[in-house]
Image (tube, rainbow, N blue to C red):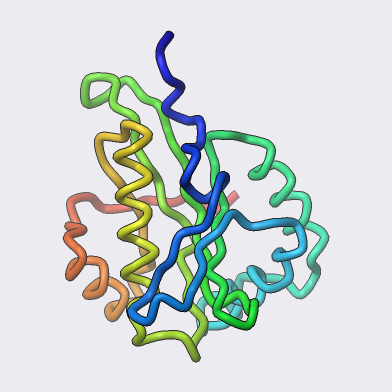
Length: 172
């Protein structure tokens, strides 16, 4: 029997915690519906997010339900020692025909709370993304980042991501 690459592993976020950050005091885990307000607050807590995120939590709850129900998508939060959500990301797995039928991992919505930055949490989260993506058989990890975030670009490049493509979007 062939193992489903989209199925969570026994020791990964859906099945167990992962320690992250330089001090090891942060727990990376699958998000729950109770985490939605904290995730929305992280998404809105920067100049770009403040202009595109809403104070109304209902649409985010509906989106969470859809993400949570699909095994190709994983919404993760980082929680500090006192249980406060200090980071989040979404990891999605996209099957495709290009690159020899390669499975791609897509990272979205990476955020670390301002008070938790500079401790290695973002790096630890993305290291976990690479490990989980390899475990599921993905050929590459891809992400987009807004052109107005040069510090973020440098961060990703330091972790080995390369600006290989130009992202295009069409607002609907």
